[in-house]
Image 1 (cartoon, rainbow, N blue to C red):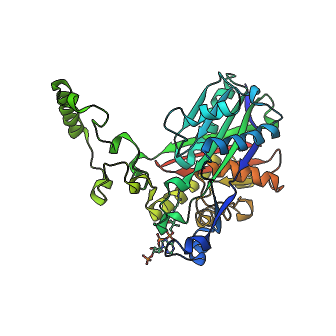
Image 2: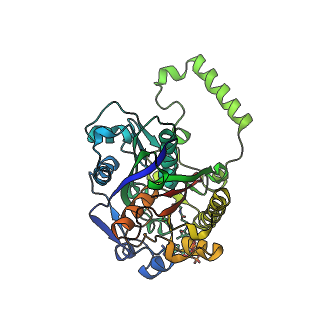
Image 3: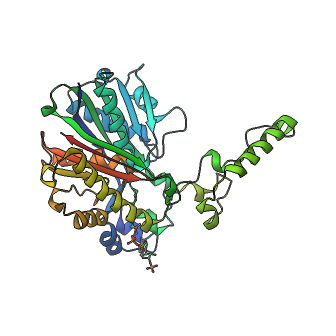
Length: 369
Ligand code: UT7
């Protein structure tokens, strides 16, 4: 039996900083409101030509160095991103190219803020079965591209950055292992946090088919059959009653993050509480056995509420949102890498990661670092 060990972590934050004071000039908000309601003071914004794969490269080279490995040692690349470099090829392939390697599989994961935890869980399966020895898992986000800087309810939250972990095969669980993992999704909450476009749902059905062929009977019949089938299986979409999305994907509005803040907030607290409860139940452990909680950094108040409800000590929580904002799937690897750098997290300690995000998706991993 093989075990998964995080052999090294790295992170990258772009140079440009967007402060609460900057946002005060853009929307009707205040530094005080943002700090009080979220814990955020500033966030980093990627440069004009800085792509998710560029940031992923920087954090990955750092993680490889910390692992005493080179890109040639890797067997698999998993990249989580909400907004990839482009739709095809995936960002993992681009990262592979930038790392100067070839042949090994490279896959993007779409699970929003839970993406890193999903990637870690997938990596663990390949390590445990002995299929792969070293897997690169990355969360890299340029959320500023999909943030509406006229919407004060979302623009104060998000930032850019990347975080990487190398997951390596290991025979001695004392030197690092994953004790427990659980992934979940709540597709019924698809209207709580979403980005309408681009995507087939809001693209014109026959957009790429030349006009003369649109009149073709076969296509018309096909389109009618599809419409009929859709009508029969269609469930009411809660979004449709609230907002009729514009079918034109060039409409900037549809390319932005839409969020029902309070709904997501309440669900996030519930997810965190039940993830802790399930981890302790399945492992037969107690709160004392967890040295650190490394949660997705969406809002400081979510974490404080979780501590209040579960009795989890705040001193054992990695709070790391003040100068980054919510950086989606990059948040967990980045905050863990920084906590190691600051001497908080040490080898041999037991770490619980919990993430939640659009989908809604969620995931937890309890591991020995
Ligand atoms: O990573 C994915 C997961 N994402 C999350 O977990 C985010 C979860 N949600 C949240 O973090 C919070 O719900 C927000 C930070 C988004 C909002 O905080 P809230 O305490 O839930 O505020 P609210 O939505 O209840 O709004 C309270 C008031 C409203 O004004 P009225 O209606 O009471 O007059 C809002 O319009 O605060 C107003 N408001 C703002 N005021 C100043 C909302 N955003 C702002 C703002 N500045 N930026």
